[in-house]
Image 1: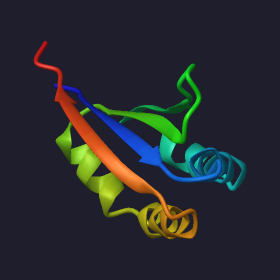
Image 2 (image 1 turned 180 degrees about the horizontal axis):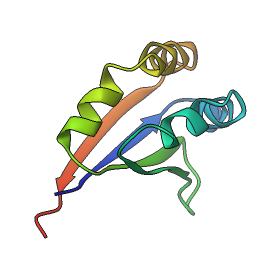
Image 3 (image 1 turned 180 degrees about the vertical axis):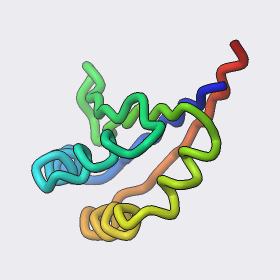
Image 4 (image 1 turned 45 degrees about the horizontal axis):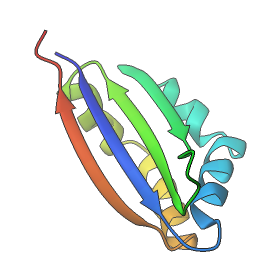
Length: 97
């Protein structure tokens, strides 16, 4: 049973895009992708522009996601969210197949 988490990061004046770029350039994205059980960790921008970036975060199971939430990378992600003053909206989907 896989889990997919969509996280919408919204900011002002391009801050959400800057956040995603720093996440990538700092190596945090690579670290998360290398965590056991991670299947996808990818940022997307809407065609309509705007101030929101979508992260699709996919995990093999709940245990892998729980381990990610307890990992050393989470405080660094939280610090960047704070730095860029982002709001989050989270959607969670469970694959039953």
